[in-house]
Length: 119
Image (tube, rainbow, N blue to C red):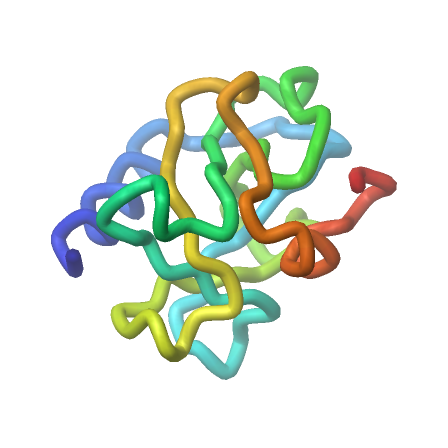
């Protein structure tokens, strides 16, 4: 599990997201105390509260769960961290490939990502 989090983090850094404008943007905190929301990546889609995706164009962001990483906390709508223990998580997530696949399984968690007018 720890390896998948590291792979995701490396992918985000390598791809870079400079010049992104208004969108549901997130910054990945280095410490749990700095995060507004804690994500745990589950082993199967059935275990998730949210199926989310990472996109590369701000115009693709239409709802919470369609997200883009930014380089600094000042650029972000929300600061999150990926945790290793499911019990520490606010939202259990499953990574999907496209915005069309993004969906909430547990609607009660939706309020945690309602930013920038996206609901």
